[in-house]
Image 1 (spheres, rainbow, N blue to C red):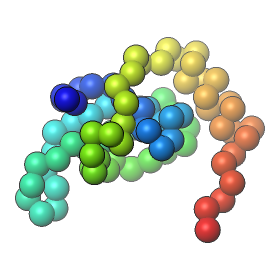
Image 2: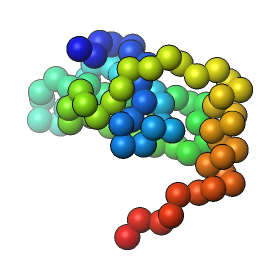
Image 3: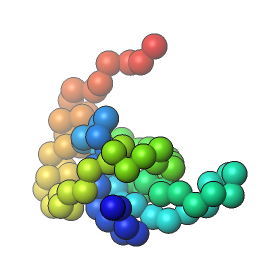
Length: 82
């Protein structure tokens, strides 16, 4: 079970890392909020997770690992979505 502050990566986008936080959704129900690691160059807004399976708990990457991810993504951007 996920808990406040867990460091995770997105299952559908494993190069995106962040932390889980408790929050309140627009409908007033409690939810788990994904907040991206600020060290990543490719920015995502905070968003609520639909299910715990959307993320995988993992170790926090070092600054060097994040730098490498940023370089790889800069040099090999994902194809545009339609």
